[in-house]
Length: 236
Image 1 (cartoon, rainbow, N blue to C red):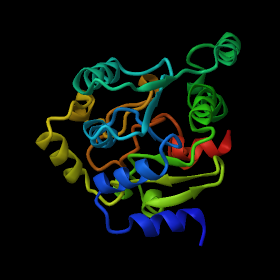
Image 2 (cartoon, helix red, strand yellow):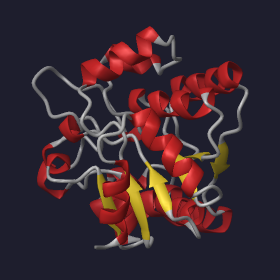
Image 3 (tube, rainbow, N blue to C red):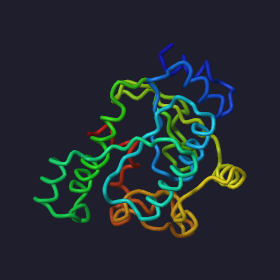
Image 4 (cartoon, rainbow, N blue to C red):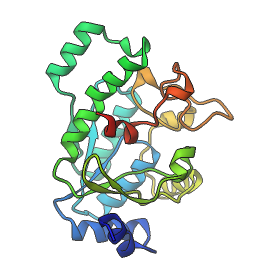
């Protein structure tokens, strides 16, 4: 039995809150949660902060976030009075990239877009996860087809740790109900057709009937698009 299977057996049948509490106790100092301040991440942040669980919450400040994202970030700090550790891109790498290719070169090719994501998201993520044993995420199964093929506890070979998705089996309605019931601050872009919110230049609202992530890297051929940071980090 590998490490992911061992952990899955230990937390099997527990509620998301119980999962977080058990893992926080067993892996204190070696467990982190990554938030991008979307609905799902706000739910998990609430579970961690209200119980004062020893789980390090972090975010990636890409430098290209929506004003609404900064708004909910600040509201979260005000509401819970807990730190959110912030990781920025490497300044030298970003300066070199923008100097050579310009601030919006990601529109010009998939290669440029991947390079931009690599500098602004993947490299900082690698720093945030270094030395950790458990990575908590807000991934849900019904967010896209490929995520339905994932497991809620899995081994991340790239970072040599176990990823746990406590609300993996929740529906979007479950998430929205939890947010409303607990009066959790959330990104107002969700009310404007943005189910998935990344960098401002790379995200648009999703039209009715479109895939959950159709608004991400919307100018690219659908077949060439990756499914976000949880695919990108393994390719850095």
